Amino acid sequence: MSQPAILLAAFGVTNECGGRSLSAFTDAARAAFPGHILCWGFTGTGSSLASGTPAFPAAPLEEALSRLAANGHSRIAVQPLHIAAGREHASLLARIAAWREH
Image (cartoon, rainbow, N blue to C red; front, side):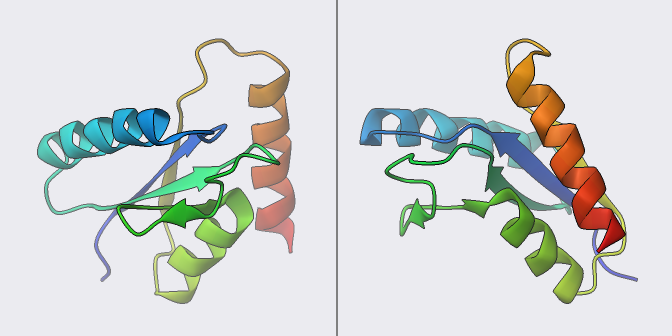
């Protein structure tokens, strides 16, 4: 049985300062969920760091989900980090549903 996987979903970052903030969040999440695989999926388009950096690896949402599935994770918890359940959150839910159906 594979380790539990958590995909943190966020719009993305457009500068290194934002990347540092998400890296700090990653550290806190790893401390809170030891033994879990933790990765990021960005929902935005056009973010200059949407594909991640060596210090902050990330991928577009569907690519991150597919990578986890390809590595044997059949159960993936997706935790959105959008502040409010608006248009971006609704789009996230639709994209996850479409990915699951493929």
